[in-house]
Length: 375
Image (cartoon, rainbow, N blue to C red; front, side, top):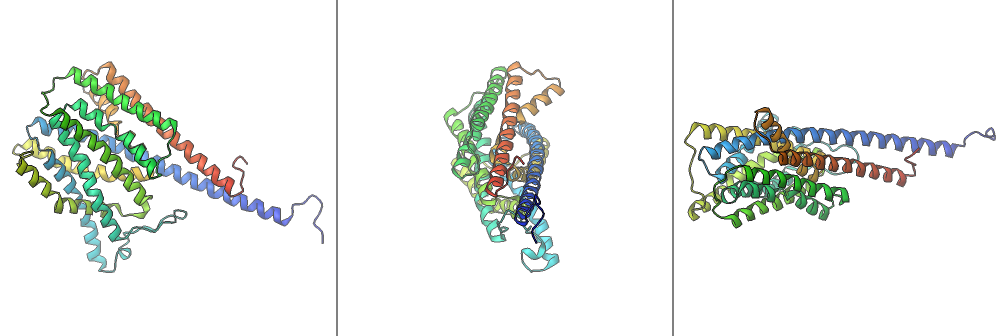
C-alpha cells in the first residue's frame, strides 16, 4: 500500500530522528562542557584568592628575617603528603583488593574514551611533576633573594607565553590572534604594576641581578612545561584521583628533594636553619595549609579549562591585591590601576576566545554527522 501523497517516507523520518538525537547529544555535551568550564573559573578565582593570601604570608616570613626559599618550598610541597592518609585509610578498611575496589578510580564519562590512570601511572606522573613543580616554585622564591621584586615578577609573568608555546606544540592550546594579544596584554599589565612598585618602594640592592633574573626566567619556562604536561597526560579530571596524585607528589618531595637542600648547604647558597620566631613558624604553617588546598584546586581548574586560562588567570592576583590595598586604605598609583585593568581584560579575552573555539568545534562535529547546526 502506497503512503498518502505528501507524507514523509520512513527513511526521511529516520534521518530526522537521527539528526534530532545528534543535536540533543550535542546540546547536552555543550551544557556539560560549559558547566565544567564555569566551575573551573570559579575554582581558579578561589586559587587566586588563596595565592594572594600566601604572598602576604610569605612576605611576612621574609620580613621576619627568615630567608630560606628552599626550606619554605620544601615544607610547602611536603604538606601534600597528608593526601595519602585517606588513601591508606581506605586501603585498610576495604582490604587489599586493588585500586578499583576502593573506588579511587572514577569511570570516565561517556565520550571521553580514555581509561582511568592506574596507581602505577599516577605514581609515575607524580614523580615527574614533583620535580617540575619544585623547580618552578623554588627558582621563583630564590630569585627574590638575588634580583628585585619587579624583575622577578616581570620575568615570571612570561609563563603565559611559555604556556601558549608549549601548549601549541602538544596540541592542547589553539594558537589564535586573540590569545597572542591577550598574553602580551597580560604581560604588559604586569610590567606596568611592577615598574610602578619598583619606583615607589625602596628595595635593597640585589646581590646578583643576572642570576636572579635567570632563575625567574627558569620558573616561567618550567611552569609552562609542567602545567601543559598535566593536561597532555591526564586530559580529564575524571581519569585520575587527585588526592592520590598529590599524596605521591608530597611523598617524592620528602624522599628526594632533601638532597638538594644538602647540596645548597654545602655550597653555601642556603645554609640549613629552622625558624626561631613565632611569627615565622605560624606563617610557614599557615602557608603550608594554603599550598595544600590551593594547588589541588589549581590543577582541577586547569583540567576543567585550559593551561593558558589558568596561567593568565593567576595574574588576577594583581587586581585582587590592588583591591586589598584599597580596602586597607593604602595608596594605589594610577599605573597600578591601569595594569590591573589590563590583566583583567586579557583574562576575559582568553575566556571568550575559548568559548568561541569550543562552539566552532561542536558545529564542525554537527556538520560531520550530517546535521546542520543552524537548524
